Length: 389
Image 1 (cartoon, rainbow, N blue to C red):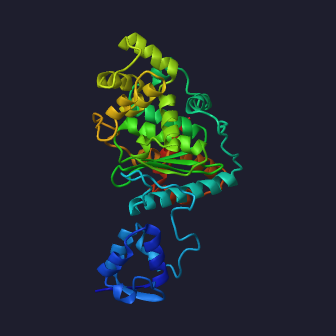
Image 2 (cartoon, helix red, strand yellow):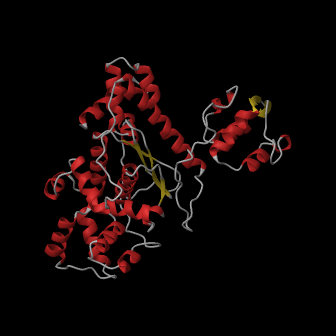
Image 3 (cartoon, one colour):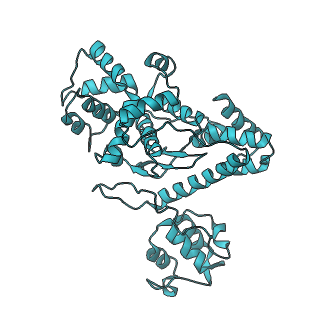
């Protein structure tokens, strides 16, 4: 048996920051006798290396983190006080899981790194559309479509042929305006995404464990609405069907962006021969969703908002309703550079490329940040970022 010595304060910091069950973990590794329910571990603590690996895995930290002589000087919590938690099944705010907190912590780290580079390069702040307190979701969606140079239905349908391509197009439009987007997995698909504000490198995170491409697009737009309204928020799947004022506003914005009123009315008249959709007409919902490459719930709330359906249609595709499965984003044979672009977005590739050109970063620093193994992988990563413009 090989032992390691760690500082008790560092161990306690990691347990609290991760939001795990402290008592259970200390009992598992045999440290409960050293720390009661209220008294924290301090000073040097001897622990078996296998137990240390267990704690590192439970707290989503590297084993090397526990070699620190003292806890980090930053806040003990990954989640800032002004960060709004997701909703539970009961409609109440719930605590983030350790996996969710780890994803948030890693996203913050990427954002902080990007912010330093952006500042060194003299980049200006992201220029959002003006959102007034009195702005309604439909007006906001029109303004955002102009900001993103989204175009009319004819131009969009000439380049977007699937729900997966729609998500990619929205994401790239946001990246082009300076909004970082992350697409990474969090265990389970309960948490759909979150927002992290910043003047120069705002970030939207979408959980890639959500396989339905329409759900990803709706999440991306829902989180964009939070960003525009100045809110840092984590959203569960319950948030994306909530009818509270804040979440409802974001849902209506996302649906309005996906289905502009005139385009939706024209489609219904031309292809469905209907001006109103009945509560049980799921086939009509399916057809509209297929045409606009969006989800059933977004169709229903948009129809209701425009007076083209009643609340009963929203109820019919909410709650336990399961939308037909999609193939999602499963792709085989991706290179490491392609995987990094898919995870971190094209904007960060362009940012790192500019930093390299201006000697603000070394090649080794960039490769380490992105876990790219060779110069060729880095070159391919940067090329993918440039080609997306």
